[in-house]
Length: 497
Image (cartoon, rainbow, N blue to C red; front, side, top):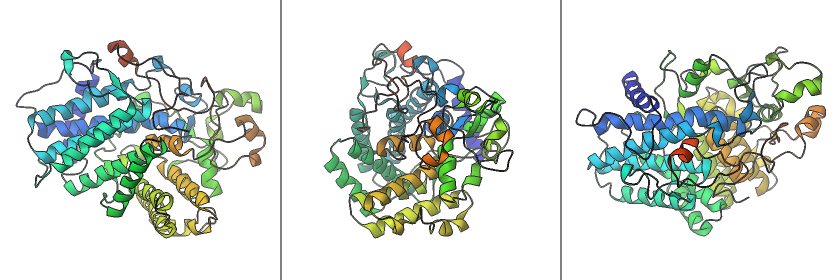
């Protein structure tokens, strides 16, 4: 069954990627009675998972300072040095996957199915798709989108309008459920409607917190977030798209790209290694390899072309810790982890309910869930007693909240890099170091472990770190209503600070 589902999804992806599609026109894939909605949903889920688990996983891994460019390769210098514009095509494949792929498929299903549960799960996937897209570029084609040749140049709505719109769609679809049950093939949740409802509530919570911190009806969304946590109707375990195998042609999205490139371009970034070491975190061994001296060493962000200048020697791969990419050949795409969910609950309990005890319970559940997902369940309890991560040892609520955010960042590594980058922008944690990359190289003791580091070579026009990615070049080429180009330093709609 798992392999059959993969074949359905892969077929859908190949039909999309075989040509350069205009998302404002009907994609050129088979329709009719032989392609039933039952076969379309796996492809739609795959399109979104591929966007999140491949392209976004890579560039957001650099922006969250988990990844750095491997010294003796060059593929991702532009990510490491934040040197991107629309010509970089950073988001183009994701744009096609989400609009011409997933959302077009979802529209096809809902236009042909009268089943309320099928329509509901399609709406959830639509919310997730728009959440991912607006987190990248802030706005999106929405009210006029997906109308084909009747409206070839849909306007782009602002992110607030988009997210309020899809949240309203979700409420309406849920209200219409009645006693319906899912009829479609569903590799993501295996037709478990209760899990789908739990996923929908978790998505709401994720979005509500972004709205709150973006100053958008903060009181209203705070009340809604508190109500969600009080009801506690969320999914169990992890939500993950788990259809991959360790075989050529069936690799995970991210590893499949590495395999095609025939080159490992990744080493560990300095901040994540330093934080794992400072907190005596055994998860450091989960995805990282020791260097030639049997030590874990992270590379300073954007420093590849500066290392010879600083050290007087050519920088080599084996000086720093590589990512153990082969360990992720069949890794699922983590859509929403139990760990992330519990961290969000901990935040709500602390910030809005002023319930330190409940926040502690959720925080420890979040860390424990992440350890368990990495096969390290037996090590979580001892780790949580360490003075730097012991919730009870934190002096103030500000310290406790920062710890929740820092440990969430630590838990997102090799799980969901897009959410890591979004949460860094929302919370400003980890903070940006007051030291330059060169100062940290010269005096490591001046650095606070885990802080973000301005890249040694940084092309962002206004300085700082990445706040968005450029609009897709295909959007610019195909839609005359695509907004004026933005800088990577321009914030998305919910990033108020």
